[in-house]
Length: 429
Image (cartoon, rainbow, N blue to C red; front, side):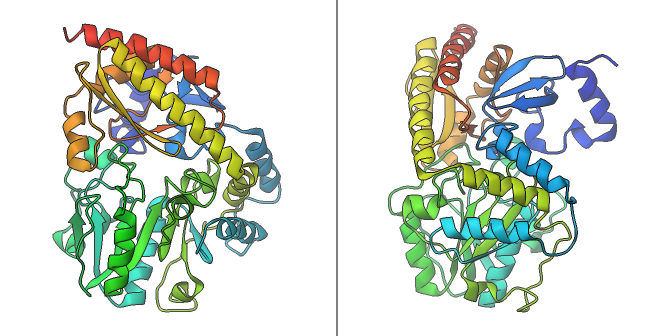
C-alpha cells in the first residue's frame, strides 16, 4: 500500500466510522484529507508521507511537555515492566492522587477514571447523589464530554458539525439540563444540584471568564445550596500548578481533570472535599466503577509530568505563549486578514476573518460563532498546513503551546502565518 495520507484515510474509512475515532480529528469542516501521524517529538509530528509539522494541537492539550518527552517515556517504560493493568489497587494511583491534591487548593480526594467524559459524568452523579437534586446548569458552547445529559448546546466537535446536541439522546435525558449564556451569572433555585463550568471556555474557541463571573457562580451556588463544578480537563495543570482554583482564587466543590494528568495516556479524574466524596461507593450510595481506572502506565506518566514542572515553568510558558499570541495576531493582520488571539495564561484562541479590520475579543458563544461563521478558518488552516504548521481542523478548538515550543520555533510559526494570511487575503480580493 502506498504510504500516503489519502491511502491510509481510505483504508480507515472501511473499518472506522468516518475514518476517525473522534469527530474533532475529521477534516469535514475544513475539507481535505487528514494527515496520519506516525510519530511525534517535542513540538513536532511526522505523518506517513514523512512530512514534518510544528504541532499546535498537542493532543488537544494533553502533551504539556511536548511529544515523547524522555522523562515520560522512561516512566511508562519502567511501569510497563511490572505489568500494564491489574484491576487492583496500586502504589502509582496513590502517588498521583497525592501529587494532584497537594497542588490544587481545596482539593482533598480524587478518583481516577479513563477519560474526561467519564470524569464529568461521574462528578455530576456525585453532585446529584449528594444533594438529592436533579437539575444541572451548564453554559452555552461549553463541551463536557459526550454523556447524554451534557451534549446539549456543546462546543468543540458538536459545534463544528453544527449540531444542537446528538441523535440518539432522548429528550428525557436532557430534561434536567439547563443551558445559560457563558459569562452571565444565572439565578438558581433549590432544584439545582450543580453548576458545571469550564473556568476558561476552551471549546467555543477561547472565551475568558469575565471579571466576577466565577466569583458570582460561587456566591449563587452557596445561596441555594448547589455545588460548583469546575471542568478542568483542559485548564487543569496548564493554567497554573494549582489549575483554575489557584489562577482565579475561586474554589469549587467538585473538579474534573484529564489531559495533562495522563502524560499522553488515557486518564481522567474527579474530586473534591473528602466529606463530599463519602457519597461514593463503597462508602456511600453513589455508584461509579472502572476496571482500568488508575491504570499504572497512565498514573506513572501523569506523575512524571507533574513532577517535571514548577511554578516558574508555568510562568515561562505563559510569557512565551502570550508573546507568541501577540506576534501571531500582528502577523496575520499584516498579511491582510483580520485576527484576534484571545489568551488566558498560556491558553490561546485564534479567530480569523476575511478582511484587515479588527475583530473584537468574544465574550460568549454567540460572539465566537459570529466570527467563525465568516468561514475563513478552513482556508487559513490549509495554508498553514501546507507550510508545515498543524492546527486543530476546527475553528472551535484552541492552540496549545507546549513547554517544548521554543521562541525560535514559535517565531517560525509567526513568519509562516504572515505568508498564509497573504495567500488567503489575496484570494478574497
